Image (cartoon, rainbow, N blue to C red; front, side, top):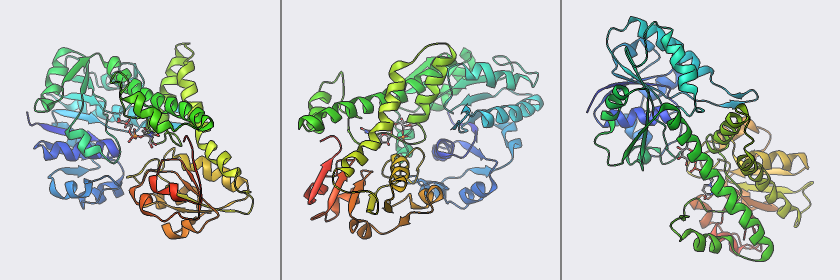
Amino acid sequence: MKTSISVIGAGYVGLVIAACLAKLGNEVTLIDIDELKVNSIRNGVSPIYEEGLDELLRKVNMQVTTDYEKTLTSKIIMLCLGTPSDEGGINLNDIAEASTTLAGILKRRQDYCVITIKSTIAPGTTEGLIIPALEKSGKKAGKDFGVCMCPEFLREGKAIHDFMNPARIIVGEHDRTSGDIFCQLYEHFKASIMRTSLKTAEMIKLASNAFLATKISYINEIGNMCKQLGIDAYDVAKGLGSDDRIGNKFLNAGVGFGGSCLPKDLRMLIAKAKEINYQPRMLEEVLRLNDEQALRMLNLLRKHVQLKGAIIGLLGLAFKSGTDDVRDSRAIGIVEALLREGATVKAYDPLATKNFSRIFPQIEYVTVEQVLNSDAILILTECEEFNELDYKGKLVIDGRRIAKAREAGIYEGICW
Ligand code: UGA
């Protein structure tokens, strides 16, 4: 069914969802308080790099505004605000503020609408924080308005594809009517829809990302042993992953996981566990292993060069290839350590240089060829162009398994 939808928050998730829903013929309004962002999107320029997004934005017809009043007429309102982690834990300020603003709107609405949370939040947040804030309007969830929690499983860089071709759709519903109305939005998608309680949906999202993170730390741990034993972790992963109970995805050993989701969502789940007095030993270890993994690159490097005074070249600064996102990128800890130990850092990334230079203005951002002229090269993302370089005679420490880099004069793979 085509319907009128307001999407609140023009971050990765909100922007992609809004554009895709508009492409599917819905009447979409995208709302964000950041005027610069809104203007840029209106001009068909995405504020973030996402494959195919600029083209899509130029093609689709949707309203982009800073004005919450537009939600007054939407049948479905989707909350897509960020839940970043800061020193105090997970920051729910934006979600809380938006819920209060929406309560003001609900107060004036006569008709029924469904408010759906897309943001990643800990189990219990919709019921414990969002619904109480919305009900300050004097209206009642399940009677005057509906509430759903529908997590997203989009990968950065592949988000449009993932939205259009979901593997599964999880709909947490406050009550049957809320779910019935919201599910109509997905009736033409091929994927199965699983309907659950609100907090089950919240948990499915966190458990999914925590599992992916666990798979990576697991293969990295096996890989670290493989390295010492003279075994190739990629051969092991191939043998292991061909058992379909295990699966071959997310078994690429390397420098570890980063990004705005896997590390943060693990931390969110760990914090929730502690809140209920449960010690999440495995999850904590997954995170610890991941932090140590990046520093293993430096241990390998130290075997070959004295870091003080050396010029170290980095290939890849984003948390993975195909994105300009540097949040929780493994490169951050590595650069910090290199600078601390007196090395000079020259770095290249095809998309993320600008974002990385906001964190490290003091390092040199150079061309890919200039990186090759360093005393040693660290490969930190699996960018295709890194597989076309001439590494002959160089010293390379590879955190992402770039086949061509094996031609280097001295080559060390992190787990192989
Ligand atoms: C992740 C999930 O894959 C999405 O399903 C989810 O929707 C999203 O988080 C989110 O919660 O919004 P994303 O952060 O885009 O997506 O990144 P991934 O592609 O999952 O990669 C995460 C990190 O793991 C990257 O640093 C990547 O290099 C690393 N990785 C991935 C490995 O080290 N090994 C692997 O085998 C796979």
